Image 1 (cartoon, helix red, strand yellow):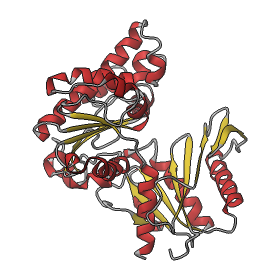
Image 2 (cartoon, rainbow, N blue to C red):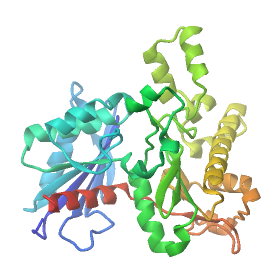
Image 3 (cartoon, rainbow, N blue to C red):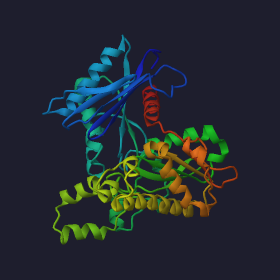
Image 4 (tube, rainbow, N blue to C red):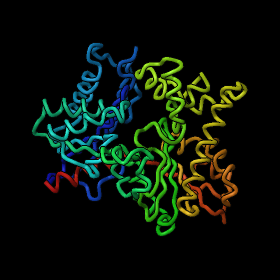
Length: 396
């Protein structure tokens, strides 16, 4: 990594989209903003689009037989066209699940890829697609270093009492335990909050990562001590299309009484639940807030907020109080009405919202003297992954 013109490519692969970002690897410190980024969206759907820095998204034709490979190929072509003689020194991948084996970023090879394939059932919305990108690059550019950066890694500081599930000891020994997710986002928070708030962030902090997927993380000394997602990314908060924490008896009922197959139950819990499932309209709170005259929409929003408030209360109990509550990710950063409703229900903690600051999206949205302080902090998962890749390559 001694060439100042080198770049690090970060790939964040989902089931229907691929986000990418290029970072100047030789700059010190590593820039928070990418030199260039973009996204292919709607992969596998009737229409796919490609957008990049400074350019409005436009339709792009992808091979219907292999749309994901085609999307990766389109990104490669666009990057090659923009390199101008510069070199990609490494590729960083956001990987949702590292299992019990990987608690830190790792260089990708055939053995690592085989390990990560075994975790696909634990993160079916993301894991297969990140691995597909790795597989393609290993075949086409075996000389190019790839680094897997795990969403589970930040939570390796969880105590065993938080990791354990109340199942048999044999299940624990087989790795059936709570892992936690959104770790790249929480890792960025551990950096950004320390910079902005100093020692005030090192006490009892709860971060609410509210996006299409959602979770909470309780931190002490900016380390994870409890989180709402567990064995899989289905646990905890109600989400856009995912159910969150659910009585397992309901799953048994769906399979035994309503005769749903395992595949049908999985599809229902991941794709037909949450805000979309209850409202019947949308998984996006921005859309739902415009249709609250519909009882189903109102019920969906009420439950969404209630589950966030309930889980914040649980984490506050674990921490013994809250000093700082931080909202991040798409909904957390941009939806002032959801934040207002959550904070209003937390008045018992001493939280007093500053309505004007909340409408302006922070950074501090609580009133002077409020305890806890409430804040909004944009996340930056791609930068965390790029930093890990640079460190991994430097270490050899």
